[in-house]
Structure formats: structure tokens, C-alpha cells
Length: 244
Image (spheres, rainbow, N blue to C red):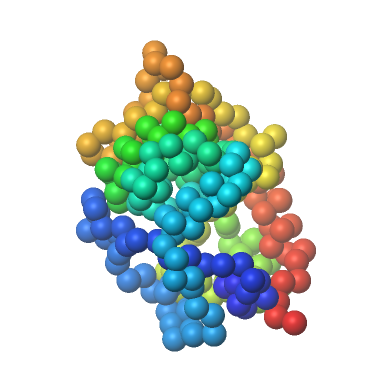
């Protein structure tokens, strides 16, 4: 994706495979076919944990981490330095189900990024870092409908063509924009409401909220989904990223 959009200077550093708690954590998704055989760029040989730790120490209280997958690498950072994540300016994480489920029902469930590596998730929530969670409470409602997907297809840029191609390979399901919401919390804080609470993770991968304890995090509890999607679409459409 970085190569296709002319962003080759952005480094890619590989993390450790997630394999702790979920049988499907490393399944081969059809979307990987999009990049099959690509060899024009190679990832860094440094580990993700070392890369994160190095930059946190180099730029204390300046680095913003956006976490949109299982937190295996965050746990590896903490293994190397238990206080490392406290050096981040802020962490925005697509992580957890606090009051709402995937279907939007008021019954929390074990969210994918948590249950894929439950032990890592426990270490992450107890890290003492300044974490804002974009859980299912604000991500499950952000869907890219057919009309907007058609507009992206008609844009015909390297970025929008990639998004359209991945949609087909993914299985033609209406995409829920789980991960972009975490980025949106950083870019557009006025579109969200958050709540300071105490978060923990149980042995089944549920993110538990205890409002009687001292807060250790912020969780998203409201998103202006329509305006968020409008801004995301504007970003997708009004760009000319590509190879020179």
C-alpha cells in the first residue's frame, strides 16, 4: 500500500505473530492475495517491540501510538521495559467491548483484538499508560455503505482502487470501519464522547469496567458516525497519493 501510494519512506517493522489465545489469529485471509509476490520494498529487520521502545525513549512524551490489532507487540515492549508505554504521549487503541457488542446490542462481548491474545491484553490495560479505547461501543456503527463504496470505485486513484480491490477480496461484506475510528479519535476529538473508567481484562477476553475503582483509561461512548464517515470519505477522495 505504501509503495502504491508513493509513501515508500515510511518504515514498516514486523511484529511477532499473534498465537496465544485464538485459533484464527493467523489464518490466511483472501485479502492477502492483493500483495502476493510483492518484493519492491522490504520491511525493517528490527523487531516491532525494539522499534517502539527505541522511539519512546528517543522522543519521551511526544509519541502517539495507534493500536489497531491484538496487543502482542505492546506486551513485548512491556516485557523489555515495564514502564515504557508510560513514555507515550497518548495511546489510541481499537480494543474492547465495554457496554456494546458487535451487533450494537447493550451486552458486551469478547472483542477480537482482546481475545486473540488475552495475556497480552491484561498487561496492556495494566501498563499505566494514557490509553483511549475505541471499542465496539463506537466502532460497530461505522459502516461504509454501497453508495459510498461506488463513489470510491469511481475515484480511480491508487488508494481508492486498493480499497475497492480489498473489499472484493475480503468477501463483499459491508465493511465496518473499526480501525479508522481509533485514528479519528486523535484527528477529530469533537466527534466523540469518552468516559474515564477503570478497565480490566478477564480470562475469557472480556473488557470489564468497574466504575467504583480509580480510572485507568478513557473509553469511547459516543461517535457522530455520519460526520465521521463524511470526513473519512473526503480524505479518501480529495487526495492524489501515487507514485511520481
